[in-house]
Image 1 (tube, rainbow, N blue to C red):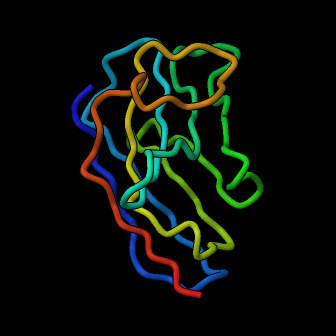
Image 2 (cartoon, helix red, strand yellow):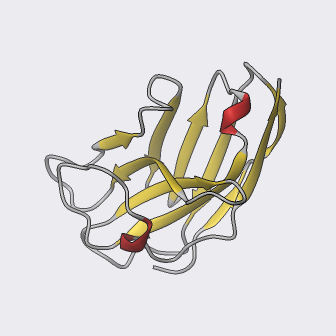
Length: 132
């Protein structure tokens, strides 16, 4: 798995939407989750959403969301484009952060709390700024 590349961030008003993308040059692992994290200065990196993209059978496409974004954010996968999307609706001021994507090469189901130390191939991040 090469480094992942994020894009799609920007300034928005509260209540608006953004769609972030995370593109990989290749997927080298058979058991992979792609996760979105966010971080604000002075705080720990927080797991936002993850999707299991490993294998071809049952469980592929399984998702996980942090409580703070459940019902507003949707993570999805486009295999043909090797891209993981994060659709963010009804954005709030507290969603303001640098958003990063990364891959967990040893991902197992069911998905649970996202630990940054489990993830590799971090991108450079894309800034999301929500004004109220």
